[in-house]
Amino acid sequence: QVQLVESGGGLVQGGGSLTLSCAASGIIFSLFDMGWYRQAPGKQRDLVASISSGNRANYADSVKGRFTISRDSAKKTVDLQMDGLKPEDTAVYYCKARRDFPDYGMDYWGKGTLVTVAS
Image (tube, rainbow, N blue to C red; front, side):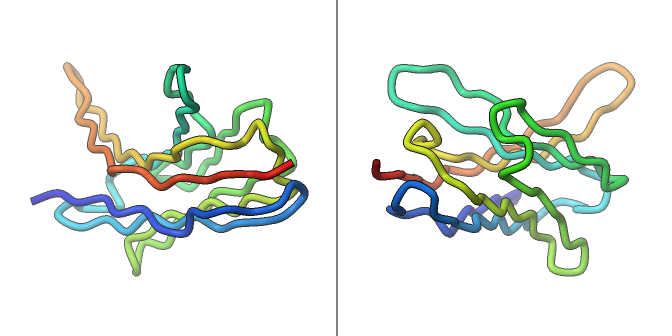
């Protein structure tokens, strides 16, 4: 059974920092690309940052220079360090694991963790 469990969300003042963590189980972690997405009320779910199985990171323009994604294959975790938080970063943050095959992709999602940034 695949599980992705996010933790680390909460309420923080603008300019502050939070670290989100996603613990994966039931998958061969090293074979999966991992990502953090977020969804604000009334908006679509968007990519925040991703990190490939080969440790290549990619960021949304809105978080470049403020957020850092990292993965630990031994612990099967992917973290999102968020600095310089802004009220517009308020959203539910979701962890995703993806593995691509020649004809299809396999996605797994966590249930999300809420980040609220006060102005």
